[in-house]
Structure formats: C-alpha cells, structure tokens
Image 1 (cartoon, rainbow, N blue to C red):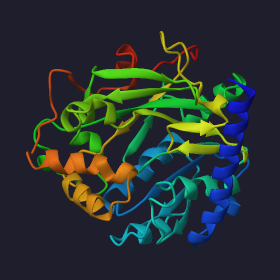
Image 2: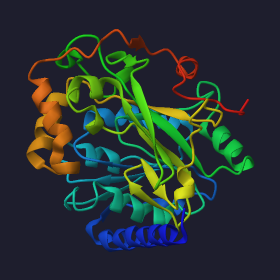
Image 3: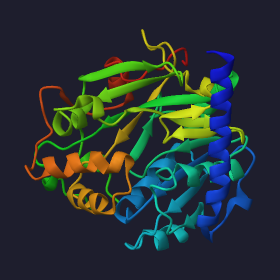
Image 4: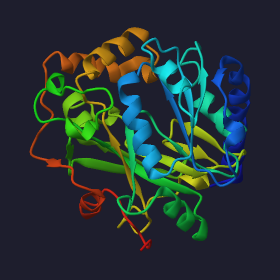
Length: 336
C-alpha cells in the first residue's frame, strides 16, 4: 500500500471516530451500569429494534459463554424488549429515535460506545440473531479464547456468517419466546460459497449460502457479505468501517488465510429465517433504513411471497463446531 493510500485510510478512520462522537447525542441512557465493568471483563455490543422474543435466549447463550457485560442500543422498539433489557443486572442500555440509516446502519452508535467503554477490553459485536461459535466452545469459555489470542499477540478474530434455516417453509418455523432457534432452524449450506480479496482494506469478501441462491440468484454479486470480524481487543483508536465486515486500521482485517485456514477462526450462526422473518422483512422494507435503498429487503419480500423452502442438496443439519471445521468453514489453527 502506498503512503498516499495509508494517509487516506487514516483520514477515513478519523472521520468515523468524529461521526461517532457527534452521533452520541442521539443516544439516551436508559440504564448505565458501565461503572461495574471490571478491567478484564469481556463485553458484548449490539444494536436492535423490536427483537423481544429473541432476547431471553440471546442473553442466556452469551452469559454461558462468559460475556460479563452487555451494551445495547435500542432503536425505538415498541415490543417490550427495551423494558425487558432495562431489568437485567448485566445490561447497560441506551435508546434512540435516530434514523438507523443516517447512523451508518447503527455503526456510528456502536463506535461511540466502544470508544467510550471498550478500550482495553475484548469486545464482541453481534446482532441479536447471531450466535458466535469458536473452536472448543463446547468445553472452553470465551475467556480461554481471548487469553490465547492475547498470548499469540492477535488483536482481532474473524467469524464467517452461516445462515441457518428450517426444512420446509420459513413461515412454518414457529419460534417461541426464549427458545433456542436451532430447534426450529437447524440446517445450513455445507458448500456454495465464494471468496475474493478486498485489496484496499486487506480483508476477504465471502458470499453465498441460502441468501445468494434463493434471494439473489439473478445477481449473486449483490448477495450479503458473510465475512465478519466480531471479536476485537478494542482500542479507542479503532473504528468499524462497514458493519463488522471490516475495521480501521486495516491491519485488523488480516484475519483469514485464503489457502488453507491456518489462522484460527470461528462462525456466527445466523438465525434470521424464522416465522417472524416475513413480517420483519415487510417492516424493514417500509422503513427503508437499510443499505443501498433496502435492496436486500426488497429481494426478501419478493421471494417470500412464494413461500420458499431453503432446504437443498447442500443442506446439512448442524451438530457442533467440529463439523464446521471439517467442512472448512472455521479453523482452530494452532490453538490446541
């Protein structure tokens, strides 16, 4: 990379940090318990809107993993989820009526909270329908992973997004509040992924899975990106550039080995496709607060009219992280 390109990326990072500082005015604290955060606590950051049914299991899952404090931004929910989160002893909560789109799809809000509270902490940034899975997660807490990353002088840890889905129509995947979503959407694509390199930012770009083949079959290049870097040893000089797909400085994006997976990586099991999804897609299409004039939700809404069954010849029932490693979707690298 040239000196000029490095300079421009440095200005870009400064811009995102200034934007985050300005957008802090849109956040109103509902319950701020950050004074209780200990020096070695692992933090989770999340922005959400109207996800009340998912919250009990989401908190249960990540508490069991070893997350010690949750920092949520609620974007004007009206389904009781904000009130539920405000009652939790390990949750700090902010609310906003600001436009999700004008906050760079929530990135500005989370960049501010991370600048303010995450410095020096391992921080996991996920959506409420994403469940982080890493090597040995069935026997080792996340603290074991971050201790190894610290020892190995690794500052960021990648996770490929794996879209989970039911066998049969999405509308038939009935989800009960607090239920493990794997019980109703336990399948995923074992193959059907493409990978390319973003030379400017230094990260890989992964696409494919059920969203590419079912919702973007005519234009697979417009399918959502599946590469994410959700776990970072945060420094106040850092900033997420595009959701959790890439960060600045760009060195944090060098998390994958393209030709064999020697670098350790994880997965994010993504449970979007439940019976609540058609209504959610209609709501988000009407709000038009998502990327590229909500082209993703236009594709969802159009295809959902046909009541698709996402199950196909690539479908495999999820068992555990070792299965994902065998399939080459994640790697334990040299962590033993």
